Length: 323
Image (tube, rainbow, N blue to C red; front, top):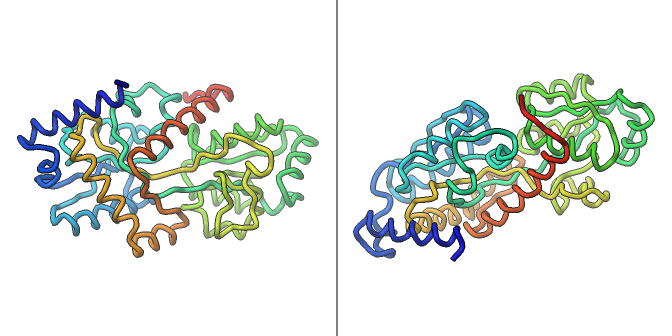
């Protein structure tokens, strides 16, 4: 029996003992009290908005209070640690982003993002768009590479901060193309967009969810993922342009403590999948420039495994270290 399956079996037995009933009855009993969504980032952002949308739908469905608590700090690790070390009864939930996995190779954590959480489902998926300032005399990625190589040390790429997806993607782009774009980190999306609009930055990997409205003001040279975006059909993927390991997409996802009884995990996951198929929910997510999620626990676990492998390799090869 694999460690993952063994943990699932133990969780199932624990759940039955905790509830004093069998698996089918366990699902019927849950939830038995208010549910807390822990968002490890400040209120007002996309993570917070998505969490509140799902929380409201769960509350309507289960007729049980579902509250969102923002616990920002330390790059999201404070909130994640509260859930990892909290009660494993299905009433304390982590609503996090892909940074949860990237941090494995970037810092020492008080929890294990793989071993301490049971993945539920991605709520929304966020591709990145590689954009260039309109002041650059280029119209595609190949022309940018030629320009940068002819002018070493002159051009830059901006990010939302060290260790973010945009940082990893920029370093990966440098490694694979031989460019020397200088990394310039900012504190979030707003100052990054402002710098791009003002011409202080040459290029940036920009999150589709937070920056979509600004894309017409830039030259869009590529998108992450395996397929072109339906609303940017003219922008090729980086994979199409001969680059690899740009397939991972940003995401917002739900997690429970790994020791949560499996019948509870199953019921929670099934309900979240149902919610994410609702037309009004999908419309809301798409209006944010995001792609609706809603896959099974098993498929989300596969995404996590692949993401960890790719991001850890990028961090190692690019020698990215957080001070």
